[in-house]
Every structure is written in structure tokens, then in C-alpha cells.
Image 1 (cartoon, rainbow, N blue to C red):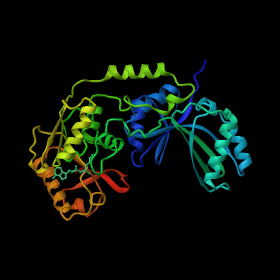
Image 2: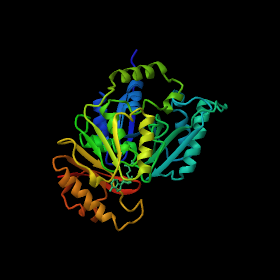
Image 3: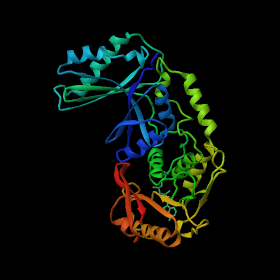
Image 4: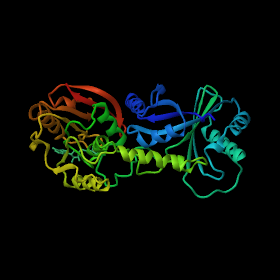
Length: 369
Ligand SMILES: C[S@@+](CC[C@H](N)C(=O)[O-])C[C@H]1O[C@@H](n2cnc3c(N)ncnc32)[C@H](O)[C@@H]1O
């Protein structure tokens, strides 16, 4: 019997599409298309589970359920009712339906979502179900066609489950991992985050270096689907566990001058059992001296917009330039910040590797030239 294949879509933060496509390829999954904000691929449940378990830079993974033409609500209802909802949703599951519309006759997105809910109830029956997780459904009306997607991830994939202790302006785990991958970080050279905050870069670097699957501690929406295969999931976890390393090939060091940030990072490291592997220290980056001849320095300094305007920011960026350029001249250096006047204070040349938004602010991953 031929295995059923579906079309999937990995949602990424715009700017990270190629990084995430590279991750899929490394998993043995061939992307079929890359568009702004995501990548399409085809596969079965194994590919879907693997992508949820392993993708570091992806935000969520959708299943394309169908694409129906409709210029009026009765037609929309009738065609949506015929989609195979029962493959992914148990009767009585609470659905959160989000609709968008452009260039279409049906523009009332609230009504589109209501019609979809009615179509699901007609297809699956109206019975009250067990109180499980909410199933997200995305409807995109475009040019009088409605594309229907079912979310397989549940919570956003940046929620790995380890970051409970936070600091101001933390970086999303998916963005931190994507930036490390964009710098070709693979754990073979030392890594130093000079402004670690809650430790996101250091932790994501350790997960990469140890070949640890970022999704292994969490649950996913597909686990509530009628055809969930726990045996397949267990098998993927066992394989992931087998490939994991217990020690680092090269050190990971993380520094911050705020004791509260160090305490938060320490808690997050402990939660993952990484506290003995990562060298965390409280101090000013200016006091740092290279303990190794080369490696990758990376950091996400304050920008002002999110942490409050501060005249001393210019001098912070100036100091950063000195640490990157003078103290660690042989190290590769990367920094995430807006391409604004501030980074010019560093007085060393940088070139952009990626452009994306962080907390609503347009930033770039800049690499020391
Ligand atoms: C935007 S936060 C970093 C957030 C971090 N990437 C995370 O995901 O939690 C900037 C951090 O830089 C630290 N910092 C600012 N000036 C510093 C300095 N001179 N030396 C070391 N750390 C500094 C702050 O304490 C703060 O934790």
C-alpha cells in the first residue's frame, strides 16, 4: 500500500527561509518551493514529525488540507464541508480558526471563519468532545480561492520548554538558532556570547553542538490528531537520543554584566542539564581576554528601542567594536542590531548576513568583515 503523502508548509520568520530550507535538506527532506515566510515540502507523517522535532529555525508546520474556489458563502460552506477534516480533527475538538482575505469577493474574515466552523461540524458531527488542546486552522482567501491549512505544531516552535527564566528583550530561540546556523556554527569551534541575557545563544549553540533535537521536551498539536502514531514518534525520539553527544567538542562561553541575567541563564541551563557544559560568568565584556586563538563571538546588544533610549548606548557599541576588533581580532564576530548610526559607533566594518525583525524592530545579523 502506498503511504499517504501531504503537502506541508514550514512557517519561518521572514529572512530565515533559506536557513530553514537548509535544515530540511539536512533532514533528508527536499523543499518543493520557498516563498517569503516559509517553505513547502511533501511527505508523510514521518517527515512531518521529524520536521517538528528537529527544525531549529522554523516557527510552525502546517498541513495543506485543501484549496477551494468560492465567490459566495453557500459555495464556501459546501466545498469546505467536503474536505477530509476527520484525518486531522477529532469530533468535538475546539478549533481556533484564523482567516485572511485579499482580492476576493468574500472579505468578511469573521464570517469566513464561522462558515468554516459550520463546515467542520457538518463533516465531523456536532458532538461535544474531550477537552483537549485547541486546534489552529488557517484560512487564506486569495483571488476567490480559499487555502485551508491545519497546524501540526501547537505552540510556536520557539517554545522549546526550557526558557522559563527571562530577562528584558530576550531573543526568540528560533531566531537565535537561525543566526547561529547562518554563521555556519556546528559546535566545532569555540563560541562566546558577550551579552548573553537569559542565555539563548549559548543554549541554542549547545543544542546544535550536542545534536540535541530542540523539540524533544515538548508536545505538538499532531499528538491530538485521530491518526497520531505514538510508536513512530517514540522511534524518532529513540533515534534522536542515540545520535546525541554528551560532551562539547569546543567550549561555549556566555557573559553578561547583569547578575539577574546570569541567574536567569543559569536556571535555564540547569533545566536542560547543560549547566556543567557551558561556562557562564558575570562581568563586563570589556574585561574579556581570548582563552582560545579563534572562534565565533556573537551577541544581541540592547538597541535602545526596546530597553529605553540611553545615551550610553553609543559608548557600549564603541566598546563592542573594540572587543570584536582589537581584543579578539582573529575571532569571527557577529552581532544582531539595527543597521543604524549605533553600529557605526563600533568603528569596525560589518556586512549583513540576514535581515529580519526582532520584537517588531528591523534588524540584521551583521558579520565582522
Ligand atoms: C538584549 S539583551 C540580550 C538578550 C539575550 N540575547 C537573550 O536572549 O536573553 C542585552 C544584554 O546585554 C547585557 N549587557 C549590556 N552591556 C553589557 C556589557 N558591557 N557587558 C556585558 N553584558 C552587557 C545586558 O545585561 C543584557 O542582558
